[in-house]
Length: 239
Ligand code: PXP
Image (cartoon, rainbow, N blue to C red; front, side):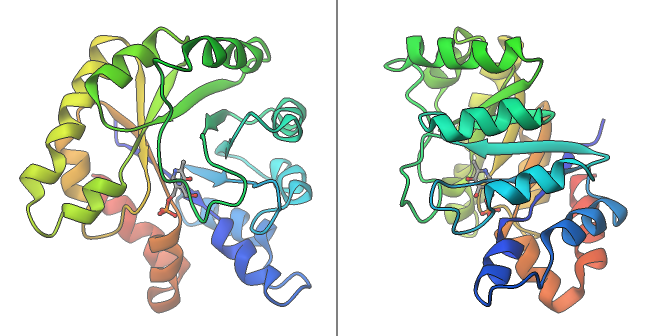
């Protein structure tokens, strides 16, 4: 089965927020991304609501016909309540600090094992699939299996950064981490800095990759190629 493309629409909200008003509309963007072939929509509400707002998440929820993925830090009770209320297909837990520019590390699944077990159970008991954001380290992925999570999302910033220097070296840890996830029966997602150049090689070398979530590069490419062409271009990379 082809790897699914979930489009992160936070950047649409960032553009809208720069002027106030509702242009561009995140609801229209979500509808159009799905119409143009996206397999899912991702949003990442942060506590200061500088990108997607909590009210956007509630509105978008009603028009999702594909998979809805909400990312965020469950240390914020407001986030936990939002997810339980809107019941997305998947919640991706990310250990980002409130003011952080963008996510920059995965969970310590060893040190935070008990906390993760408890919070993951809250979402799973509500019937929501859970994925946790992790660095591509075999021991971290192996420990993730003990938390009860359904999936892990591999943090791909390091891959993207080194892809153009040496793609074989850049992918090595990800292939190894994927094999550990497969062996433990964990579903596998990936995201961060994936783009139209580095995506196909990643998918071809990471066994069992179920889903990628892509925001920054895809929305930036859409300025040049249009949203429909861009989504199709990314889908083609996924094979
Ligand atoms: N996955 C997670 C957990 C993220 O925080 C982000 C960025 O919000 C992404 C994926 C998407 O990253 P990018 O915008 O670089 O495609």
